[in-house]
Image (cartoon, rainbow, N blue to C red; front, top):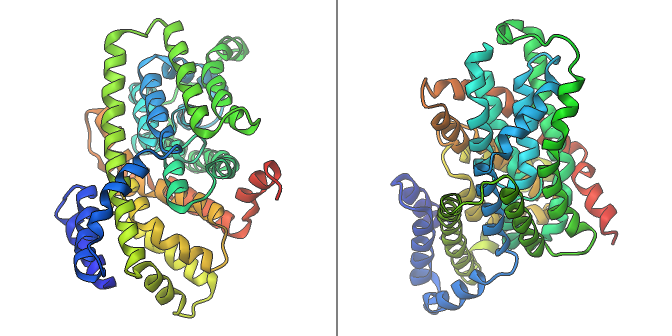
Length: 432
């Protein structure tokens, strides 16, 4: 049963079938061959009930926020406002890429939207500034991954629904690791540039006082930070649930776009189309995964896998490291949202059985998914940045992503050694 399931999943993905179709076909096969009754008859209620899940309603609204921000010109002003703050730091605009991505991530909730938006603004400055191409491009792709760790995050909403953990706790747990990971990215760049100054040999050197430019740019930092506080702040002061906060954030974004004079019919139609495409992809996968999960639980497959893994007798840390290694390898070949949805119902019971907190694991898991976004050959952020670049070899991105993968592994190690980095804030906000 376990072997048949794994075989079907791997063959379907190897044939490049749509992930939702692979999950649904696997569920149908298991139902027909191992269930006592045809579980396909339960597919209708499953699809209907989960498509109306109150938490999942937040996903299309966060996607819409990112689409509107991408088209409103906020990203260009954000980038220009942050650039003077890093003008004297070795690496200059590379740090600006990371900082811009971190701020934009706090409003969009999407890694792909963050990479595409910041890439559109940053790439034209690469050759003009004489930066090392792999490192510069790698910083954009890696910075984009912060979109699913710094709240609000679409992936955390999906993980919350699949693992039945609190999305509020997950958002709180991701805040400190998200900021730390952004600082690790910049730290890696700083060390690389100090060791090898030729990486930024052509970067222009700032002259004179930078404070007038820094102060002049502060108003342009207020809109994205304001959106962050509208969404996340409304959750933690108790004014709104995550779904209601997403609605507030979307309304605030529409107001911001209108103030910027970009609230036009073409912009709205383009944003609607992008939102519908992404939402449909995610929801089809989610619904197929819920049906597969029902089948696996009903035929005892989840319990069988959990018992088999725990029965190996490995110590909890050894099992945890094996699971992390499994995800690092899987991320090289599988799209991230599919990887999350297909494996969460199986792995989370094992993690809990080993004695680890599911909220803590959610943050470690999201970082591993971030790594998959910049791991060749399937790392989506690499291809997003390459599409924005429109020229050159994608091997530049493959090479440039390596330092940032190292930073992610360092962050995972820190979370294993100090789980309080993720758990302190949710426990402080919601003491039990």
